[in-house]
Image 1 (tube, rainbow, N blue to C red):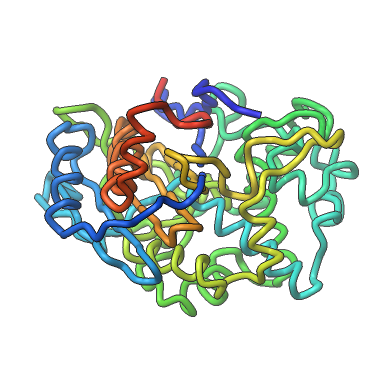
Image 2 (cartoon, rainbow, N blue to C red):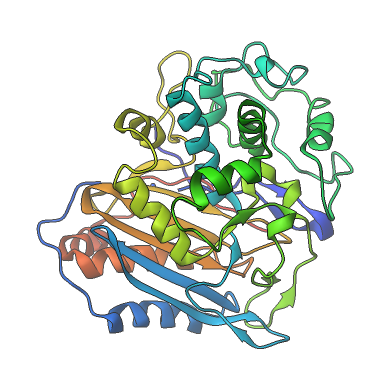
Length: 387
């Protein structure tokens, strides 16, 4: 199943609308080049010149090490703070891969199974007795997307308890019967984070710190409102930028509440590629397309989208947390041991990370450049946007 670039949307304060994104994969090239630093500098400089975000960071992973990490532009225009490789950004729906991996770790420990039902952890949610954890992960549950301020008066500032979010989400109707369709919904991953917290008997942010961030030396990473201070200031517009209306990352919870840096996400990608986060069986689930109840495949795995770019297998996800961050992207090419991370503070930065990912791939693999000139991406998924 291939998806076009139609957009999923949710509406935030001040009419900011977005629908956290997702992303794609192919076969290894015939021969990999070894690009110099100047090549990556040029790729980043081109995006900076396009002026679609005040600042962004770019990191490249190859064969188990970070071969490039640099910031471009400005993290805070008022203070003229430059972006560097360690600048912290709100990463939006890149957060979903952490929720997915957390669930799979609990499966490995026999704390739960993917066939468990949502009702075991969140009774009262629509169709909770019929929705499985696998359907939440694969975005086939039918749970209605959130948060839309034209539907509910969502809490927007400060500390927001997950229980308050779910007290509102319980009042929504399901969009379709579980397993009958694929539709991107942030509610799925908010619910997964809540399940992690329930089964681990600790707040979700604490779980992430203890189980993932600290062991992988991701010292710039955190989750929620408590981790939001000190992140790059979010802006909207192109060329001339204005600050976005500030929202609490607690609102997005497991669907988009993580903050991180390009170097931290590079460490995360390396750990995934080296099998230091999950077993081989769990990694297969994480990066393999899901199915509907009738066996029809969907173009989404678990917090990643499996696809192909210029003949190279890729898994990717994009993200945007309006009011907290800009458009971000994480692309991994498992067969090539290659990963590209782009984090920005610009609401209108979509398209630039995709171009940079393609350019980095082409810098390593000449065959990718030839394939790129002959065809477009093999498949794609909706990207975040403003309304």
